Image 1 (cartoon, one colour):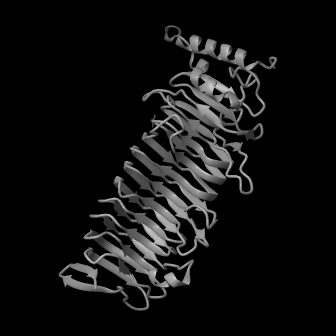
Image 2 (cartoon, one colour):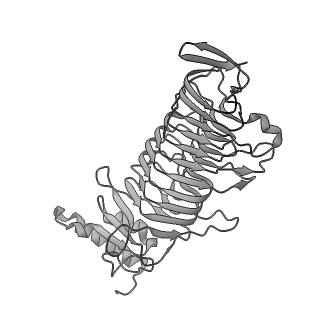
Image 3 (tube, one colour):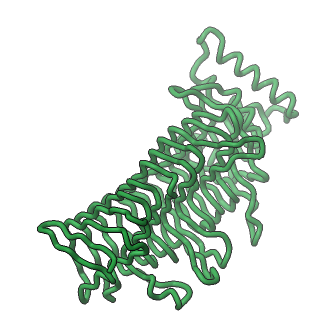
Length: 409
């Protein structure tokens, strides 16, 4: 094992590696892999000379586009401390990969433990600053982390997060500009097969003009927030657009003792969002909406919402729900709001909602529809009710052949 290097000498060695990789395009593929271990103190050129995770910014800058950084997952846990700033990245065709492996090179989750405890939110994990484009994170298991296991703090393109786990975190993916930025839009991104529990605030929040993203096969279980900030499993805000959720499950995002109103949603999008799709997603056990959709033209296909106060909350104009299922809404919170429990709540003024092949399953005959505005209308084409009796709510029903027009009474 070489003698420990000072931070200055580490930078010099890593700069040398960059030069070697760049010479005439003749460097071997092995020269573009750097190695990290929990107690490493070397230059990262091999497992025997593994670097420390706290050198990650230098390693990313040095490995170059198309390179990878391997974290030994069978040598103990990594201490995150106050987190890591990353200001370099790969390219569109050659991302930089950061992933956990065992010493034989097989995929294995590397455990990264933060400082979250008690009422202390905790520090972030990886903070992506300007220049941290086309990075791929995989096989990482985050424990006790604050507002973002991965925190996007500047405009960022090409982020991929796959096969990661988390436990006792404030948020898994956060998207808020750091103090030197006005924008932190996230573009051309993917989050796949990430799962975890004991989430206080949410699985992810995506903001600004973020666009062109997919979130697939992810799941998160919330931890009840007692009267604090509103928990949302997946939250879209500002002008985020062209984002698709596929086969994602958000469960138990609850706000207890939220004064007059107990909030908490599984999935939410805001009125500035556009081209949002939910495909085969599930929301369970929220104190408010399972799906709380405020954007226009939102699409929900084959989604299931169950055990939320209002399984589907639809605010925007021209949403489409196809082959969706609503099961057993549950009231949690202020008893004065008992009348708000329903399967589908419509909040948009003059909104027109298209619903086809709706399935309702309920042991209590809870109202299917509740309208908040007089001008809204639902066009329903096909439904299957499994309830003690039909209870459409306080509505007018106009049956027109295969279509049923439902409006507030």
